[in-house]
Structures are given as C-alpha cells and as structure tokens.
Length: 359
Image (tube, rainbow, N blue to C red; front, side, top):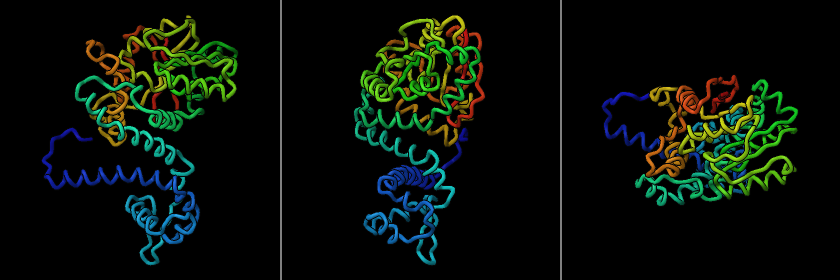
C-alpha cells in the first residue's frame, strides 16, 4: 500500500520504470513461449541447455538462448551456471501449464495487441472525456476478453454460485427462466444453461457483433432451442417474471448501474433474485493499493470505465462504479435500486465476489 508521499529520487523512479518495462515485455515473452512450444518442451524435461531446447522445438538457438535467459531473470526458469542449463520448476509448470497462467497471459496478450494498435484513438477519446465504447475495439480484443472470462469465471465456479440461491436454484432445476445482462460472447450465459438444462436462458448485450458470436456459439453447442441472445441495453431489459437475473462482471461496465439494477428488479418474478458477480475488492481505496488492485485499476482505466463513460458522457448522469467498487458500494448500489436483502455467497472465487440480491 502506498498512501504516503515519501521522498523519491529520480534514480529510484527510473529504476521503477525499468521494472515496469521489464514486466510488460516479460508478458509478451511468456506468450511467445506458448506459441513456439517452449513451455511444453520444458515441462517435466529436467535441466537442458538452450541448444537442446532449440533442437526439440526447431527454434533458432540464439533466439531460445535469449528467451531462456529472460525467463530465468524473471524467475520462471532456474539456471545452473556450472553447465549452462535451464529448468522449469514443477511449481511454475503447474501454474502455467496445468493452471490458468498461460491461458490468462495469452488472452491478455491479444487484448494488449488490440489496444496498442488503437491507442491513439483511445487516448484522444480519453483526453476529451468522451469515453470509449466496447464496440470501438476490434475482434482480437473481444476474443481476448472472452478468453479471459473463461479463466476468471469457469463453469464450476458459476455452478457453485448458482447452487446457493435457495428457492431460485430449486425452481431452475425443473424449469424457470434466466436473463443475463451484458452477456458479451455468452460464455457465462451458456454455463448457466448447461447447469440448468430445464431452464430457458436469454442473454442481452448492446454490442451486435458479440450477440452474433454468442448466437453462433449456442448453435454449435446444440442449445439454440433454449438459449437465446438479443441486442438490448441494461436500461431497457426485455421480458418479465425471470427466476434469476445475472450480471457477470458487467455492472461496472455500465453508465447507470443503479438504473440497470432497477430494471433487473422490475424484470424479476415475485420470488426471483439477482446474482451479481463483480471483481474482488476491499471497500477502502488504500486497501486496494496492491499488485492485484493495481491491475484492476488499470483495467478499469483502459477498458471498463471508458465504456461506462461513453454511455453517459455529457449527460450529467451517475458515476460508473469502476472495477474496484468493493462490497459496501455494491450493497449501496443495490439498496438504491430497491433491493432490501443482499447476501454474499460463500464461493471460492480468487478474482471475484458474488452477491445475491432480493427485493
């Protein structure tokens, strides 16, 4: 946490910037290792020289040599000076190859590539206070975002949350209906449908390209008969009497979060509920000044809040939540929308918190 304005010399600041650049380039090198098959060959192989790794992968030895040295400097590989060998430790292999590490990096790399190509346009909109809507990104960005969603919100996590909604869960097991707001490519929406095969599910999103992709995915999965996707906004939701309305990491993307929850409450059946999934955060800013908080604040600045601002710029409308709203502010937002019962679900989600809202 950094709440003080301690004296820092120019040298220490430049040193920090060098660390920043090293980390940014390091992410690209991790992704490069995936595409070149380097991580796969290193896993479980024991110590090997750069030349040996080059021989296994077909990548030129000088390139592999520099890549290995960079990974050793970053702590992903160990290096033995005596024989010049590199090794991928089991713990690192577990995180990268058997855990979410490489999938997360690959998804973010696609998003970074997209944002880099469009940075001038984004910076101009940012400086002018206009915001930057989701539709102004490109397909590479949208695909990367969906891949990241698959890492952060796997089906087993979504299912664990859905199983804790009491009467709502019981209704959806035998039927009922679900409305997913801000469905995007529909990955969580389809996870809900897979968890409740008897339920009817509708996903809405303002972004036409995402809706088209979600429809195609539902058709490929053989679920188009009971899972639909429509173009729509969070302030004009279609239908009524839903057993469950869901927001999967989407409320903070909206220009009017209270208005969206008002609409969601109005769309519920009398015994229905809203399930709200948002990034994990502390309630106080100073408690979010951590590496994780820094990442989320960066995502908020570059992606989520610009989308929300694009919906309200010049209207004098409500302030967006940002990606580090915290449970207290989310509860306040729910109360402002007319919800009287808010319960945090005991779900093991390293990057998210899950709230159940009832009128």
